[in-house]
Image (cartoon, rainbow over the protein chains, first blue to last red):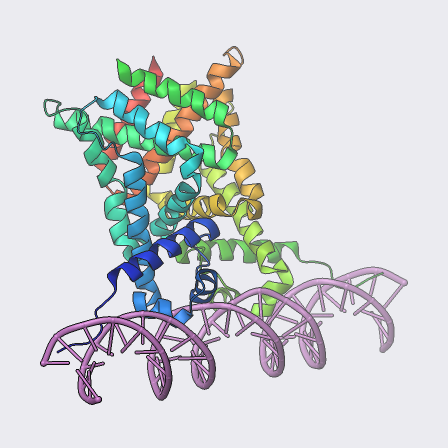
Length: 187
Length: 187
DNA sequence: ACATTTCCTGTACGACTGTACTAGAAATCA
DNA sequence: TGATTTCTAGTACAGTCGTACAGGAAATGT
């Protein structure tokens, strides 16, 4: 009963590097050998830590979700109301810092829609996570149905605007539409 | 100066069948041999008619765009106003008949965002086509800037809602949000 | 020191990829 | 009929894919 202990940090570091590579090089053509070459390790090292390729994809998606959630969620425990929460989310998602990660996000989203059984974890969270946050932002006194309807609308609009921005790069037009929408939430 | 004439209809029929296959089997793993087997032809037949694989992908995307545009655009030359136009678009896009095609649409959209240089034709049209239609629906007297802003918002919201619907299948919640949004356009 | 487990590598194998090449059948004009 | 072009199929080739296998180095408990 002994042996070398499992190095969990090693796997976490590798996963972070793999996610970085995926964000930059895309997700559809991902394969062991180019990733391993970019990280300076052998393909068998990656196989050893992640098992099958499908398991590595799951790990990548989970890590990506952690990153995007951490980047857009507000660490402060305050409850600033729906309008302010939506405005914060838009500012953080539309900024150029997270652009590459959101391109990957939508690439995964689209692929998940065509192969739902292979991306159940992603699809279960892709709407529910933000729904929870935006419903909470409306306070405990809001009517649940209208709160859900409003949260749905906010998520859809902001994501649709982000799709437009990433596709066209026309920040001026998209930003004007976003401000118009966010303005309606203040009332 | 003779020879067998080029059979353009043959290519068009093959393309339609290939698009059908792509809608059903997805777009990321598309390759010659499975498609040819499904159509009952040889791989070299497909190569002969489409050239390189990248050219076939372009042809598929173009044909898909024609289908979606024909399915959502209103053949009547009337000008029913923005609210009615948006409502028509939502009804036609959210119906279950076109679900598989829109799953493919978003899969292509996501992939195009990660490899923009390979999908310039798609990205050039993905917003502009609907923009033109929704700006026209507002009539020639509308202020161009506000018309563009409103059209941008309508496209983004409807596409975001469609993303939600396809991901969650929660038609009741999404439909309620859509009606709430479409109601604001009537004023 | 020794057994045991993990970490990492190199190699190998079958499956699949895009596509170039060859060749026969079909359809046209001269 | 004959020349010419298209259509279709079969074959082959180099490359990539995921991953199974064997073995050496490192790190632990006994």
